[in-house]
Image (cartoon, rainbow, N blue to C red):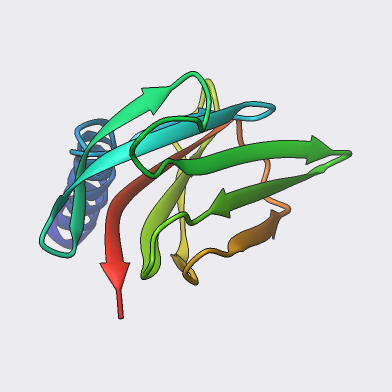
Length: 135
């Protein structure tokens, strides 16, 4: 009986802790399905911090373009990298009305290129975080 309660307590704490981590991600950008955002960052060494959303990609600072589209049951994440170095980031997929979150593999985009990732997981929004320059 003790072992069962310990497992239940561990699983519960892990689940509650995971949601708190996602809700409090610093320097994250949330994009809903069907939306496109343009984001500028402040470079702190190789890390990109303090994201600021812009109405369009025109401006003096390089703006990362992030778009999530839907075609039937599949969704596509497109990220455009305006920097002279590679861009790395992490992604969590979230579904409205559910506490379930799916962490996707760490992604990267080459300098001046566009990355396209097709996803079959049903989700309503993506949270991108831990943006950093590579190479």
